[in-house]
Image 1: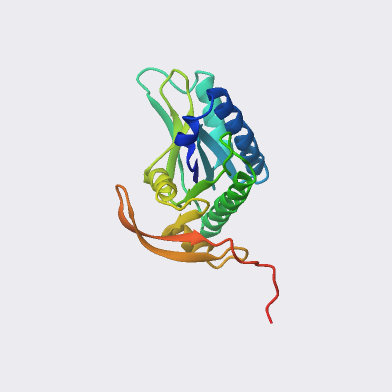
Image 2: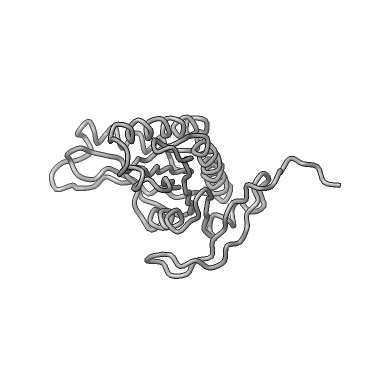
Length: 216
């Protein structure tokens, strides 16, 4: 999953850099709290105003990989990469991972909307989710950083960038896993032109329904 702040660049041009940093810190602390609430989630990194989260990974193995790399034990001789294949081992695991990502995205959108940016405008984010295989690891020997690689990462990023302000867009692969799970209602957006991918079927999370309301 990726999130990105709508209007961040224009906002950054009108306020002091320290105000931008303080605002990002305030917002990302809230996102961090959301990650901590679900053991299936793993905060990968922040890039500027983008926040990247993965779910359904073998987190314990990932932590061991990072610690090994940081201790200098993982890389020697001509080795340039230590990586582990993070494959979802069952359909149930895939569903749980997709659910965790979508649940985080919905909560993150709400948290963002509760904040005001330094330029006085309400904060809005776009969120994008895709499900698939990735490879994780630490590359290089200086300033090591745990990263995820693969087309799944690229597609998730495209789900965000081609999305709608204040909404979460998910791919067909993610929709197939969560469409029949309670608590979420999606609307079909149709085929969206996605950079580097062509036309893809996508879905938007609906937030205008009271899912707890009784019907008569």
